[in-house]
Image (cartoon, rainbow, N blue to C red; front, side, top):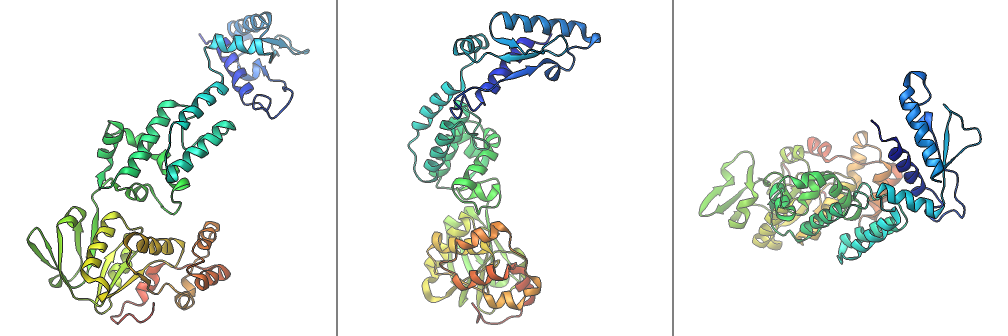
Length: 405
């Protein structure tokens, strides 16, 4: 049998705690009522006599206890219950339901948040959650509302991500921070929202987000193309003898020695189609697979240690906010003086028939790069254009020297 009494009282308290009066935004409480036949469709129908009789008895019990009063037009079959919002009455309802008032939950939850003294984006996240809790705003999609265990686990994951300095699998990281190989999967969507909104909104998918903190679902690889001789644990790998490309597992990078690179320039390429298509003289290529991972960064640092400034370094990517972000991140994380290759106004004009219009988010992101690429950004915003790099790669794959940056 349904516990109609608990259902009615819980709905009253839910609506009371959501009211402007409870939140301190209104000086006087507004009427909070429940019309029985709207909440319980079976009420008032002759063929649901037992349910109707039970609800009538509960309604009169609540009235006699002072929890509710009936509206003036309230009659059998059309009974409206109005909540008594006096403090003493509400205290008795909370006690009966064994329910903690949301204000008490908020005070306790804010105290829990105050215990975390974090830096960088985690501090921003905690501060925002405190602000939302104090103003009784939703904590979704980041946290389960006022749930201590949920908060503790989310903070363990975020702190673990910040502290992770070596590549680790998704499941091993889950076991490391949560003591369970599968538990991180339950928090994955929350972490994705937190990282995108408080750390970096340019990370496009969950794999990129976790890989930015050395956490991978699958092993990382570095795609290479060009004339080079590498050595791994005494094994010589001659890329000169290959007519295609070579895939280097990330686990091998720590044991890698570069013996020789026959190139005048090094180029990172964002798109796999362009990686295959572009063929320039005296060039060594690294495929970044969109946003570069830590394995690619480690290889590039190794490459730069070997070549230094004896060669030129170029990045070839989409002429859009994502391409600019990858380019600037490459420089920041590797300290290598990359220049942009064919990511310019000339290419936008040359392939104007292949350009795409900017989205509102494109425009917002482009403005963040305006300081370093002022003329190019101005042109893109004014003409409402962006261009995928494979268009250039498909049309300019003849062998030649780099002469257009």
